[in-house]
Image 1 (cartoon, rainbow, N blue to C red):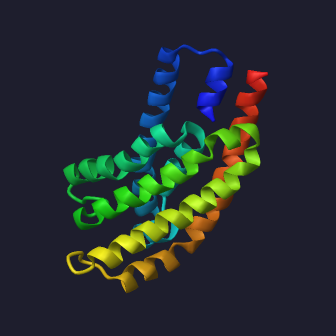
Image 2 (cartoon, helix red, strand yellow):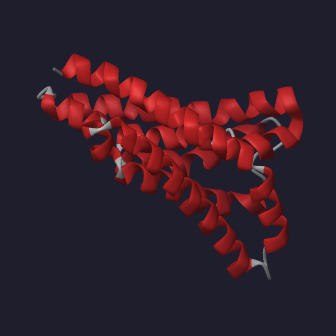
Length: 192
């Protein structure tokens, strides 16, 4: 969506690169900080239920398009792991890291593929987020099924966590599109 706005404004390639990079870094930072806040406030079960790292990635997909969002999706769990490892409590845990990288990459890719449609009509943010959530969770579960002989978790365990996170997914399926629609209204109004 942002790319479309910037193109319509005849923004230079440098301006596009700068704005996309700043927004991407901000979303990655939010993907690191938000889970920490949730874990401090609600403990580990709060993170499983609310899935706070997903929120910035879904926002990134809708705003940035798939290329930039893919970087946000892949880098968010990596940066979180590195940062929280320095604090002595890595999140996500190392065995979960590759699975989350793949899951969030799919979240970003799928929601990002809708970015141009969202620019045209903000209501496209709803299917973008919901399809991204379904695809991302399916990829995580599928990867666990494939690698469960070497992974420290089972399909049943991950399915239980997916079920525990339904409330967080529901909140995000409502909040992210509404936020994107509001941002779109501001950007497109400014664009006209």
